Image (tube, rainbow, N blue to C red; front, side, top):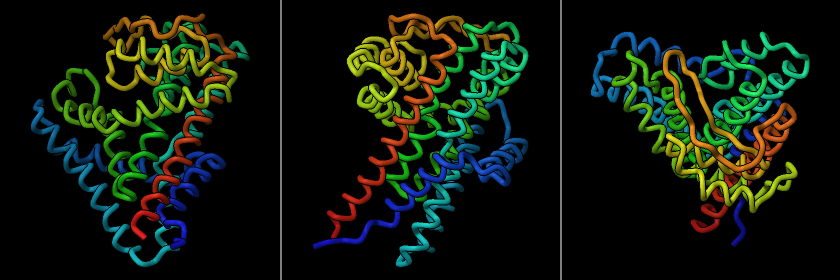
Length: 317
């Protein structure tokens, strides 16, 4: 029996296309609104306590999931409405194109020899202290950010949209936004942000590995090596302190023949990151190679997300 395309599949595909063509909404971004609400709630709930932090996470993510469920129910039996709402939500939660544009801006500053502008721009990509960084470290930070955030900003929301539709899209973005806000190892958030950070790790476990697998598959798009991506992922991915980021960074390093890792400074905290890959340290031109590979990875993830929803629709017909 033939079935019509599932509205959720069409919405995921259209939302990914909107992000590819338009990047993030320039005004009134829903994620920014969520962030303001979460910050206001934090001011009321903050305690130096894991329990308080878990409550904050539960309320914020639960509210996002509930909104997704309301939108899902409100569009039941209305395929065009479901498609439009899912497309809008997908566009709002994706950040793949904005990630690439931020990295391209960094490459432009470095090409112009404008290190002050490059340092000022780094916080849009990575949380490390840019004040003492020269071009090699700015390049490495950018390439590592592109690798990690390909999963966080694009593959993971598409994955959870495919698994759970509108509730999955909104709940994932809420959890990932909370991790960016409070999931730091700082005196204020070491305990309060623990739940947000660990929940984000759980939600990103499968998407990060999917990102690495897709990096292997599409490496030739950026002139890269599938064999190198696979080897570095398997050999080096688990050495990273994050249970997820290392898989993405190692796969990209291997695909592009690069060596990532080294000393990172986050305010007063210093981390010595393990070596990922066995090539040369990234140079300025590798930023755009990383962006090209990132775009190929997350557009492949969008296609997989849409196809998986269509297959679910076909099995239920």
